Amino acid sequence: MARIDVFEDYGVSRSKNLARRGFGRERGNSVLLHPVEVAYLSTKGCSVYLNEKKLNITEILKWCFKKKENTLLFFVFSDLRNRGRKIKVEENFIVGNEIFVPISERDFVDFREIVGRKFNLAIVDEEGDVTYYKHSEWNCVGRHRENIKPFDGVFAGDRVLTCNKEIFEKFFYGSMNDGIVNLSLVEAVYLAEKGLLKLDVSNEKLKYTARQMEKKFEERYAVYRDLKDRGFVVKTGFKFGSDFRVYEKVENLRDLPHSKYLVKVAERIRASELASHVRVARAVRKKMVFCFDIKGLRYICIERIKV
Image (cartoon, rainbow, N blue to C red; front, side, top):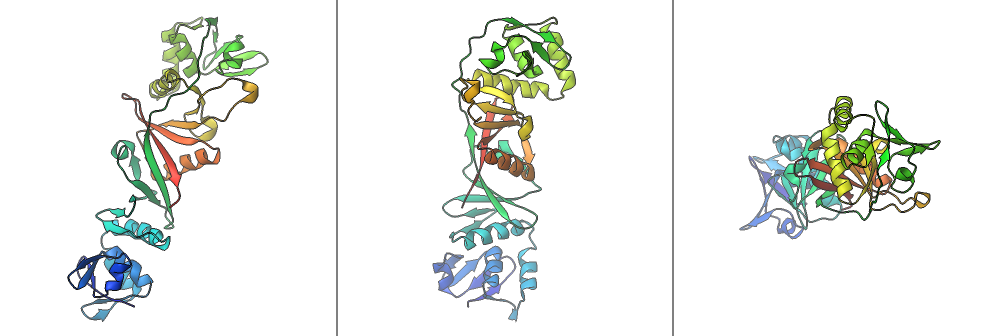
């Protein structure tokens, strides 16, 4: 196997075979290697020397990981190389046919910082396993149309009740039990602001109650209203750990289609939580969407990918 001599921040080998295999960068008669490449190659049998002393694997790892950022790079690099990918380490990225950004499951993902940028996320868990995600800005519209006639409702403290069955059966608002339709506060505020729901309290009282009961009501309501105005059917996402589940169109409740998206309002989120949300969405055949900009009403879709 090849011999590698290491210095402060890089390794050098005379083996051009390493370059042919996609490792390092040729410099004259030598191949310059990133510390992550050196550590990986040492696990494959290459001998590593420092000042003519052969290093054992512990000493190699200590040399490689003196820069903390190399730890995540190593796990992602090793995983991709073992999958047959020819890749390079460039700064804090892994670069091949695609670009990967390694992050720890403990790190926060700030959606404002990644939206529009052409790289995939490589989340490394505490056991060193890597899961990959792609992202794209989401700007979809639904196909649901509503022609709702004004109707009466009763304010019941933390919800609104109505006997108007059509609002549920035809337009899929709320839920119905024994002929009584239960509307959530976010649905009630939306319908009241549209002038469609007539209550025994003012719209201001209804919205004030909603704000008192839910700290982030205004943010959730802004997203709910935007999704409705885009032509979607929007229901609670509580059972899926999200704010909303979203349907493109509902024509018949007896033949209810699967909702297409789960939506959560979050500007940034811990990577472990992001993985959990995407896993749940994937398990129920939906896509995970985050609204990260309330004022601009911008969204990002995160999907797990195979590499």
